[in-house]
Length: 451
Image (cartoon, rainbow, N blue to C red; front, side, top):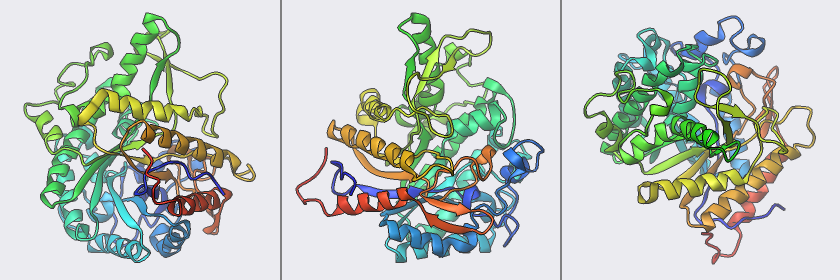
């Protein structure tokens, strides 16, 4: 039986997924196209020409997947609502069949004793909004708030807490700056208005949710950044990268201001996107919890070529996941302590809303994933013991899924193996390990309270 770790008795155990990665049914029941449908149709955009058109067929197989969650003993399930399934054109007419699917999903989760934790935006912007500028267009933020109200009015009587956005850093950089994700734009730093408009959307939607007495979170991919050497040049490069990756998306929400972006060459108004009152809209609603998605730390050196003010370099002498990401579990503890030290009383309770690793299908018996999860949960427990208020842990992911530009087969993050040809689900060794860990945590002595 796995170690129980020293975590608070009310700690919530969960697993996470995202709509486009698992639902499939992209042409069914009135769903409109998303930027990912369009991107996947672009030759060469996704490995082997794969798409999320079927993915895990969760739209039809969700009862089977909820049975797997119940078998794990999960407290919570984090999923995302597909904006184009609810509003096929991104705004205007609501698709009743789309809302009805999430009605069924929420009711089935509650019947299984699992608390739903929905994310309103996990990168699948309706293509109709992208055609009008996407997140580069300020109006998209206001359409997002309208969408949030529609979904909250339908599900809020049963769903107490909501995540507005997932990983605005990744969506901005990969989708709008580098073009390796949908919508495939290559604007470099001029993509940053998309970051501001996502944060504005968060603030507007948070007000909508708070008006309905619902709790609000925002989940971002955060990473501790370390310089590659003690040199002043590497330290400056690390600070510039930290401002871009971490503080650009956390300071406005928690402190009501942007970090100093001069090292990036970005103007204070982020290329005209920031208007008077915007930071109040972003900051004023407040957060009931901060969602933290963590996979690996980042090591940064001064640039060796013109262009970016930093250069990402690898960590020597550490293991790597199948994705090539360095495995440094204590970096999660360092990140949590760093958030506490930087933000102090402004930091709300933290939930780990994603953490996991890709393991190749040939790896047997799934031991690298077990080792990864075990070490990172130990890091969470140590951070809790040092005073960080951590409320829960959602592993990524319940199922092998459509892993964005990597397609279907290469990067498998799931506790459950999915045969994408037959849709057969097979729990892996990590599924049994996580199940036993959750059970062990629940039966520990009542006096154990963690940090």
